[in-house]
Image (cartoon, rainbow over all chains, first blue to last red; front, side, top):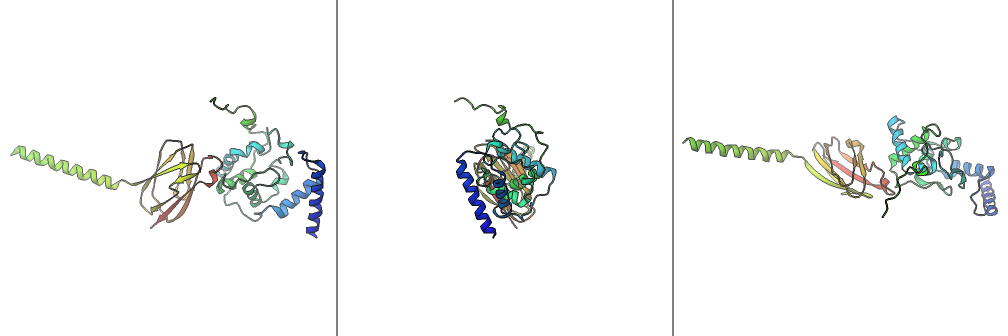
Length: 167
Length: 119
């Protein structure tokens, strides 16, 4: 029964994509609902994995540091897309990490997503790029995000990055 | 006669200083050179003895890296071309894995230094 429902949903989503062509248009409510449910219940692993790092100020700061290496390019310094010009123009849009949709994942699922990425959302895998401590501390940071906008915009979008040296 | 005594005392002093210097050299801890570069440490695995003090000399050869081995109390930033000496006396045996603690690029998460501590 579940398999049949999933097949119908997948067919409906495929039809939507085909009718819409390749444009990165925002997904509809139905599509978002089906994908979110499928991800949370079937597709994203690690549901029962526990974070080995306690939520100390130091570990959260480490997570913020790891997050700042490149996650900020899509998620902003605050994990809530502040200053990211394309965040709502991607297919699907980059979610705010403070949203109920993201916070509903377990710690293990968040770790799994950061580690393995989430296709076809555009979320890349960080396995091998970040070490396991950094992956778990990133989860801590996602659980303790600052107030939206409180950290400003990523320098790459404000023109504050130094220009490449002339050759 | 007095001259002979002075000569003997001088030779004795030189002998003692030599012995002392040699003794001090024998007490100097062993040094291990480790190079950090994208995306590995060379050597990638070392073996230490429990209770024996060693000096690990890290040098980053291409860009800034880091090293962190929590169980051995090691954490340092490694700036390109500037050797960092870390003195360590392991107090527990085991296999400990150090990681790069300064983001250095796409292979950063796979940089590992394994330290085996034996009895």
